[in-house]
Structures are given as structure tokens and as C-alpha cells.
Length: 100
Image (cartoon, helix red, strand yellow):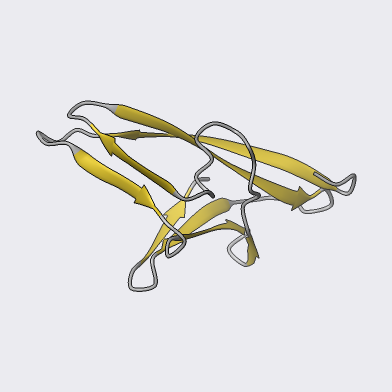
């Protein structure tokens, strides 16, 4: 993070509640963006943290299994964050997630 930014670290847990093993794949075709105050889009940083969801990731999650992932964003220190969301897209579909 730069001196004029704040580092936002988000931890996620992906749980497989199904009766089958599922493939959890994040490739270069899968894009993640943070959205500040419903308008400003920020790209996650690439890190060496275990479970960085901004990297290509390919794993299976067993029945009732869990995967913990992390995303890191730089947020300008002068930004008054009133709400935060994520946009997940794969080129065909887009999911908007409101975090707060």
C-alpha cells in the first residue's frame, strides 16, 4: 500500500454444502472488482498471501469442506467509504455483492 492509501484486506470462506465435491476455479477469465460507494471501482492487489483470490486458483472442495481466501485492495485515505461491494464476472455473467 502507498502512503496515500489504506490497505483493505478481506477474508472469505467458501463452503461446499452440497452432497458432491465441487470444483472451485478462478482463472484469468474470472474478474473481481471492488466497488466503493456504488461508483468507484478498484482492482484487487496481487499478493503472496495464502489463498489470494486474485491469482489463478484451481482446487476441489469436498462435501462440507471449506476454502479460505483473501482479497486486498488499496483505498484512498481521503475516500469516505459509506458502502462497499464486489463485482464478480467471467465474461458471460456478472454478480454484484453488497458487503455493507
